Length: 204
Image 1 (cartoon, rainbow, N blue to C red):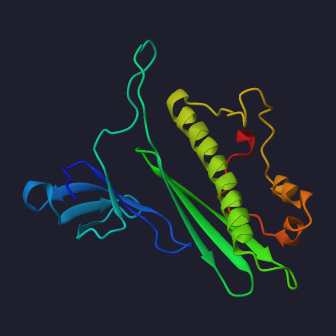
Image 2 (spheres, one colour; image 1 turned 135 degrees about the vertical axis):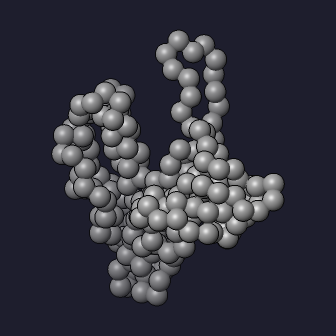
């Protein structure tokens, strides 16, 4: 692992209920960019010496948004998505997804529950839990885009849920997740709505 002053280091969550922690590297104490690093954590503002583990990711300073109107060249990007699935005794499955965009990390959770007496097919629980987490993550990305636009333009804005769809199409009650009920087997899988932070009501 190599880093320079100004880079952002992100510590991936190890458990479903933990958040991704980010900080700015303010000092590199190792030789040629090696650890340890002095990090100023964004959530507390405190600085500390960090010896990064395997759950750490480095994002170079200034990496992310570039260019603007009138740019004729194309730029390719790759985002990394991490999916964690935990299957519990009793038929409960939880999923945690994190997307690393190059400028920030966003995360979401999903849950599925197999009812008593149903056939134990773990793959179905994984699909339902991860699918619901992905739906929640999509909402997080759209909400974050709206907040970014607000920061630039200085007023509240609306991001449509589809290019030609209604801005009020947001699935706030997550009833759309019940589309899985179109088959007899999947109808036995149900889950609570994934918890999501509140956003301004006019963004949806």
